[in-house]
Each structure stands twice: as structure tokens, then as C-alpha cells.
Length: 364
Image (cartoon, rainbow, N blue to C red; front, top):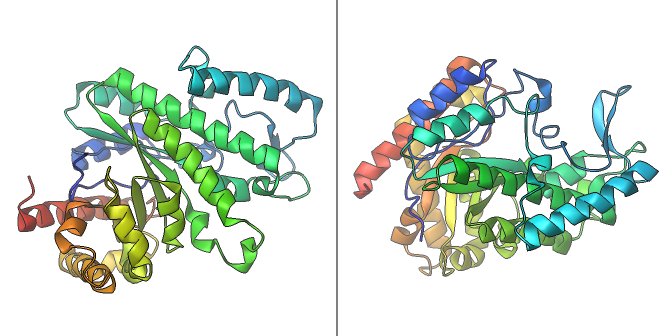
């Protein structure tokens, strides 16, 4: 079983306009689980909804509306689709990575990944955090020319799921090449998951969301990595448990007690044979005033209260020591929308909290 107990990492985006400065901050602060950052300040194509388009058939740039859309009706798409599925079959089922670099994330869609990998070569960390946009968030954000979301198009939803799977495998393989002693933690960033079940997505079937996340998660795990879902809010946590992910990450600063409503599911999650981890997004990044005013004491109290609430609502079926053992920390969401000063505060706070609680609970 992996040992992530009370460690710290971050969600992804930073406000830096220089990738080298961002990487320096990350490796200075996150010595146990560094991550590669999304830097939309360097290039807008580093935004999470644009960052993963390379190599995915049918995605085109709509110059008029300045956004990416999908076109699943063109002859070109069907030509690309055949090659794409052949690549997927070879990579996923035959472990033939000859064409894997076709699905790389390169400049201008990421300025930081090469620097991140270089630092991993000489680093002594045990884990590296990587990420893809989640299939539900991408499938409901990417639309065709008529405004129809890709998630409602059964064929194109399959393209996105398989495309994101290839993006995940490429990252896992890059980390292995950089340093084979480092395990990858692959996050699927699902901010739209907090809206699942609302009127906006009333026609989305639960089983389709579980299947999409589960398919990617299973392949991530088969490649030797840990699978995680980040949701910057609260959600139907049973859905993520059913998808089989290793890690659930959420905004614990604002919604710390939301796990208690799913105590039975969380018991199942925490007690599964390979273990399940809760990544508590305990440092506020979505509320700038809260971040300005918070301190270590408040964050520690919020975490302890949330743990107690989950244990209480489980009616003794979840042991408090188990929750502590299978907990680690992140900010509540990305820090890309913050000032440099606040982003640095958030990164420092999550690490200081990790250090404090490790000392409190005797974790090395």
C-alpha cells in the first residue's frame, strides 16, 4: 500500500508567467509530491479545457468564437478516427508505445512539463502528481458548432475518454523515464462534478459518468499509477467511490462535512483492499478573502472537525485513526486566479499544515 499519510501537494494551476519560477516554487515547497503546473499566464492554451487537444481527432479551433469545438461529421474526422482507435488498441491493450508521443502535451500547451521532468531526474521524492481534465468536465465544456456538449454524443464521448486515457499514459511513461523510482499520482480534474445532479445536467446518466471515470481510472492503475478525482466543491461522493478511484480530492475548507452524508460509501472507500485516500482541499483558493484571513490554527481545526464529523456519521464504522492514516492535503482548487502573493501563501500553508499534523500524529 502506498504511503501518502498527511503529505501535501496542489491541484495544478499557478499564476506565474514564467515556468522556471513556478517549478522552483513547487520543488521548494512540495518535496514529497511535486506537481507540474498549468500556466495560463504563459499561454492561454495552458487552460485546462484547451491543454489536452493535441492528437485528439475532431477538435478544431473556432476562430470566430475563439474556442475549441468538436466536429464529428467531417470526412477528415472519420479518417483520423480509424488511426486513433488503432493507436489506442496498440498502446492500451498491446503495450506498444510506438505512437504514444502523438498524444504528448507539448508547447504551447504546456511550458512546465519538460522542466518538471528534468527536476524529477535528480529528485528524491517518492511521488509525482500529474493531471488531465476529467471526462465529465471536458465532455460538458467542449461543444459542437450547434452548442451540443460532447458528453451527449456517444461516439465523441468515447473519443474523449480514450484520448484522455492516452494523455494519462503518456505522462505516466514520461515520469517513469525521468525516474523509475517515482510513482505517479494521476488526477482527473472535475470542477463540473459539483454541478452533477443539478438541472443543468438532469439528462446525464449516472452510469455514464461512472463508466467514463472508471474506464480511465482502471487503465491508470494498470500502468502502476494512482488514480484521483479532484472536485472543487461537493458532489455525490458515492459516484467517485463506484468509479473505483484511489483518491477523492475536494474543497474541504467550505464543504468539509459533505463526506458525512455518504458515510457508508466512504467506509467502503477507505476499507477497500488497496486503500482509498481522502485528499482534503483544506486551504481556500476560491475565496480570496478567506485565504487572506486564514491561518494554520483555523485550517487544523477545520480538518479535525471534518474528520470527527465523518467518524460520527459513520456511527463508529469508520475508525478515526484510519481516516488520519489515509488523508493528505491540497489547496481547495487551483491557484491560477490568485495574485502571486496569495498563491505563494496557499502553497506555503498546505505544506506547513502537513508538517504540523505529521508532528502531531507521529508520522515520519
